[in-house]
Image 1 (cartoon, rainbow, N blue to C red):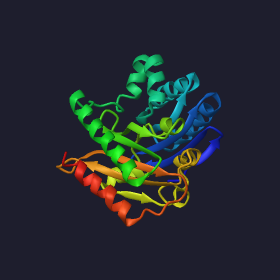
Image 2 (image 1 turned 120 degrees about the vertical axis):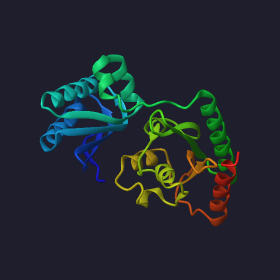
Image 3 (image 1 turned 60 degrees about the horizontal axis):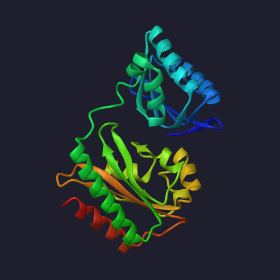
Image 4 (image 1 turned 30 degrees about the vertical axis):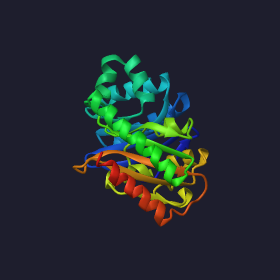
Length: 264
């Protein structure tokens, strides 16, 4: 997937998927970038009646962004087509839900599903947090995070972290793609070891690479935490500044941690 940067605060990737055009958006939806996205939506509607928006990497959505999304939904319906939001960051969901009323609810109705039961969420968060603490200790990494697979958004969500600040935490609030080590680990149910982020095919050309550079992340290791039945619970990742060769002993220790966690 190729990303473009039509404005300073916005990156876009447009792909044709089955019977619709999918537009992935990263960055901020302010006055200037909203107009850029509006033009992209117009071109997409000319090519296909059905358009889907992935807004999971939008970290700011102002009034101009809310107005754009609601207007685009109305325009698509008037033309006999449809506009849906398949994924959305909380920075988009909150202003839409606060300002958009019934129209906004229709636009994002496919984003939210049933959450975990409170006691099950607490149990899983505790397991992942403990696994993160152990992973940091055995690798000596100065940074790391634990992500819970949250069925309410159909994505990994950070529930514990060490060594990170904004905008890293805001950008990676949820992950549900293969443009991150944790996303690949989650989908493949296999550990992912990246020695050098800047030259990894996982990150090349993606908005995530810029955020990792700004956070001084040069290497990352992500291990999936599975249930006894093999279902994904979440992912634990550790991060190092600068390139790192993940030695066999570190790899084996992290893989052993993942296996042990699934037995708890």
